Every structure is written in C-alpha cells, then in structure tokens.
Length: 585
Ligand code: FES
Ligand code: MG
Image (cartoon, rainbow, N blue to C red):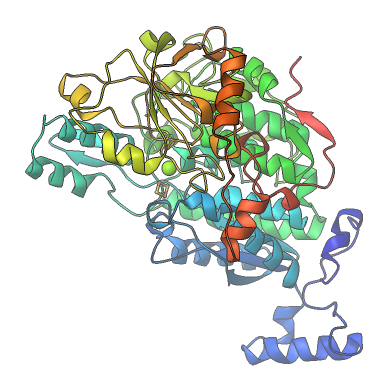
C-alpha cells in the first residue's frame, strides 16, 4: 500500500491492503510487524486484515447539517464493503458547511482538497469512498482524489426534504432569497418571515434546489464517479442508504481491479459533465469546480468551446432556480438516468464509470423512463439553450459568465449607466440608502470580490436590489462583479469577471456614470470607455494586489489562480496541461 504514486502503472497488482509494509521503521518486515500490532490493538484479527482496505472519508461535522446523515451513510458503506469482502476503515477530513464557513467556503475548498489528497497518500488503502455533499466538499474531494491517483468513488450525502409554508412547497435556498426579497420590500411581516424560516430546511441534507450541491452531485454522476443513480436520492431516504451500501461494494471491486481515477476522469468524462451541467441549468459555480478538477488531471477548460456546447444543449431539468421543482421531484422522475437517456446523442457513451462499465452500458441497463413533468425531452426543453453563457469583451478579457436561464429575458440586451461599489463594505453602507443615485435601467458594479479580492471569491455577486428600487417593485437589474453567486440565486447577474479587479483587471477602473453594454446574444460585455481613458485611470490609481503576512491566507493570496483556472492553487494543478476540454469545434 505504500506505492500509491505508482498506482497508475500498476494495474495488474492485486490489492495490497495492510500487508505491504513501508520501511520508515527500519526493515520492511519490522514496519509491517509494527503496523499489524497497532491495528490489532484496535481489535482486528489477521483474517480482517487479509482483505482490500477501503478508506472512507468521513466529513461529518456539527457545523455541517448538509452532512447530518453521515453516521448512517458510513454504516451503510461499511456494510457494502464487508459484503463484498473488503475491510472498511473510516478516517476524518476537513468538512465545509456552506452557511458557517468564513470568510467564504470557497476560501477553504483548496485546503480541503489538500487534506483529502494527502490523507489518501498517507494512509494505507486500496480504494477510497469519498462522502461529500455540501457545495465545496464534492469538488474538494474530487480534486484531492484526482491528484492522489488511487481508485476512488464519490458518495453524495443527498438533498434535504422540502418544507411547506401556508400550502406552498419551499426549500433552501431559492425560496430563502425570494421570501427575504418580499420581506425587504415590506410585502410580508416579521411573523411570516419567522414561519418561513422554520420550513426552508426541512431535514438534514444539501439544498433542495439545483444549487451548487445538487449540480455537483449530478456532475459527479456524469463524470462516472458515482454508482448509477447516485446523484438524486434525498439524504434521509432508504434509496440513499442503498446507494451508500452499493457504493461500498463497488469500491471493493475497484480495489480488486485497480480501477484508478485516471481511467474514469478522462477528457470524455469532463465533456459529459459539462453537457450535464448545461442541461440541468446547473450552478455557475459548477464551471469553476469542474475547471479545478479538470486542471488536476491536465485538462484545460476552454470557455469559448463550453459556450458553443451551451448553444446546442437545451435545459431539460425543471428545478429551481431556473424552473419549478426540487431535487426530491427530480429523483422521483428518474433522476440522472432519465436525464442521461434523453441526452444520449450528445454524450460520450464509451466513457468508463466506477462500476467498470461504460456510461452507455449503465444507461441501457437502467430502469425504463416514464412519463413525468420534471425532466423534459429535447423537443420540449425548459430553455432552448444551455443555462450558462460565456461573455467576453474589454471589461472581461479572460471571460465572464451569466446564467441566462435564471435571468430576466428583458435585460439580456441592455446598455446602462454604471453604479459602482468599491467592495463589500461600500456595498453594505450604501445599497439601502435612500440617497443612492440609481434607477432600474442602471448597471450595478461590485469590485473586489474575486479570488484574491475578498478573498476567496464569495457569493456576493448576487447584489441585492437597492431597497428604494425593491419598494418600487423592481425585481431584477443588471449586476456585474468578479465574484460568484449561489447556485440557488437568480437574476441578470454577470459573474466571474476575469481578470478580477484586485489584480488590476479592467473592472478595477470602472467609474460611476460609465456606460456598460451587455449583449447575451453577442456574448459581449463592453465598457464603453476609450482605451486612452482607461490607461489614464490605470496610471493615476494603480491597483496593489492584496497580501498577507502569514499562514493559510498568505499561501492563498500568493498562489490562487483566477476563475478561468478554477481558483485552484497554481502548485496543485497538473504540472502539464495535456488537452483542452470540451473539444467542440
Ligand atoms: Fe450545504 Fe446548501 S448549504 S448544500
Ligand atoms: Mg450554495
């Protein structure tokens, strides 16, 4: 088991379990002797040790209710591992719960990926079950496992149940935003907002809409990294527990056949995942995470090709925030298998999955689809094009994105006057002021919330509607930033402007009153200011990138990449990029 670095060339080897010794404590025999003594101290017999060892990454935490079913999941995985003849060994890693992580969960994603990678390298195991669910955890685990290289399978914790408020189905967190918007606009009172608060998160599990967690669950299945049907069962269901047991069994098969992660995470797998991301109307964060995971395997995401792929990929899944329903409905409608079957002509069916069979074989083997109204056919999509469009122009030379499926159609072609906020504090101080000079035709610009700016690229790109406009009934306005937004949010919101303002991207030099043009049709984001004027502004007030004296923040600020490289640390990406994905002409 010490030879994890050679896994990729060592496909014929049988699982080594605890048997192979490292030589850190003198000779190999003594190392093994010592290791056995310690594991026996935990009560194991020799018989238990003569099996493939399946590590189980336990990311339970009191700060992470999205992983609140972790004990039951681990029990089910262990059962699956033992039924298939393996030895399960759980171990903890960092857990990141979206709502409780400061300054933002994204700041910690790479740290979790490093923890995951190094624990997979450090500890003896023949395969690993990664258990994650909340937004950053699945990306972090896939990034770490991609770099570690051993056989790995993803288990998703599963979505929360929906709640009910005065007869209406509600769930985190599209409805959180909608009801908070109503409260801000003084349409509902304190009693009602308190009642809604009790219903938004009806059980443990991940957010119930097609936010980042659900998106990454679907993406993980499309990558071939989960068992078939692994994306959609809600957290507290028997279906979810059976997926967990099955995952444990498959992990043992993967260990025996040495099905290492590089055989699953191929260029074709990433293209399938992008296709699915577009077809589910998935979270914009999914692009950043997929870029980061792909970067670990030496694949560079080509945003222009991704945009072309989007133009020929309709949104088929009718979930909030782009549509109507929730994850439990997606699951009841057949989940990913039903979607993948509908997308079949657009997928690489020969991509290998963790089961050792191809995606096409798994789709064919799955239960037949049936009539339902959550997963549409390509002939009757929710939205004719992919949910996400990639914008370019002098305001975003490295690209920017917009979730067009969740935006107001009237604002997709728009020119307006910039109303600029220099950062989060400036925004907090002025957005609700009655003196704010703003109309519904303006373009709100928020600077300094990119990867280095905030730092950690917080989800503050969902700039609230200024209170005075909200009171007038304004529901949407064009908003632009170098930050991200929650996958559960909606609106005409341009995100991930690259390069970010904190490193001197053009966004840094936008001033109040400048004209900005957005054309989703032309995929354009233009600052209507002359080159000479921008040069003048730059030399008058050059941007100094933020720094830190010590610790993780120093590492973060010195090595974090821009959105177009997945906001990964530069030294964690593959040493060499071998291909671009997707390869859409
Ligand atoms: Fe964890 Fe939404 S807060 S998935
Ligand atoms: Mg989220």
